[in-house]
Image (cartoon, rainbow, N blue to C red; front, side):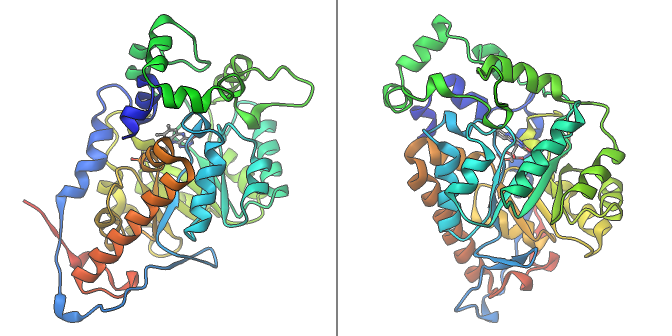
Length: 368
Ligand SMILES: Cc1cc2nc3c(=O)[nH]c(=O)nc-3n(C[C@H](O)[C@H](O)[C@H](O)COP(=O)(O)O)c2cc1C
């Protein structure tokens, strides 16, 4: 439904990945490599899907992951998705590249909400965003480490999708064929910007900000930078984009409180392994010292159950949230989350498992 609701360039911006989209495809097909091995007579008449993370209980092991420009999919998209997450009892993670500011999201929803940042070439900007997130009462900080250069997303190039958007004939035609979206967004389009990058008394049009943003990415980031953010942020801090067990081990040694095994939804390094494939090795490397989360390719409750059985504490969803948003705003995201909740619950029931902590690698078989 999102495909038919959105202009093609906008749909592809979210749906697509880098280069040949190998990693993007593998994220999803990796879940097919495992079968679920049920034990119906264990009896699971009632299932508890809740999980504890950073001393808070969440209703199910799902978090809405950070996705930039969510406000392009629905008016005030970030606020709408965050409200749906809060109503479902799960955390919402705001992207650095949100249309709204982190302060306005903080006014919209209470905890738990997380904030995602990068290491910027201008380190003072990382410090500034971190300080703003702290002041606005965010519960956790997510430092994404796999966006030090922008991935080569060829669908965006073919579609002429640029940030800032250019109104070419192709774009105008694409928008005109999606009238409901255009009508909904008519008052928004001129105001779409990277809210967190707007500084008082500065030019804030998206062209200027997009330029600043890409010039701010820094391929020279290092552990020292991670440690300095760690020293600044008071509260749980996660690294997102970890795929190597050694990097996971070192992160925990550097005082990181949680890891997100992720390849950015296949949007950055094409050829990186599926997140699920490297999850067991990272869980083993961390050896219970910190929660390990995972994103990439989670589409069904059964995928969540498989990730938990392999040792993840929780999962994040990126695109499914944007599809819900594109179709029905807050109600669409709420519906997507409810579908996931029911699927996790039903899968647990069919597996004969009452609690997520009852799941282990013994409940999976490698499929053939
Ligand atoms: C449109 C879009 C924008 C994204 N923007 C960000 C971002 O700003 N920061 C970040 O850490 N990850 C970003 N991601 C990656 C997601 O957080 C997540 O890792 C990925 O979407 C998970 O895969 P899934 O879409 O298969 O669930 C983005 C993903 C999409 C689809």
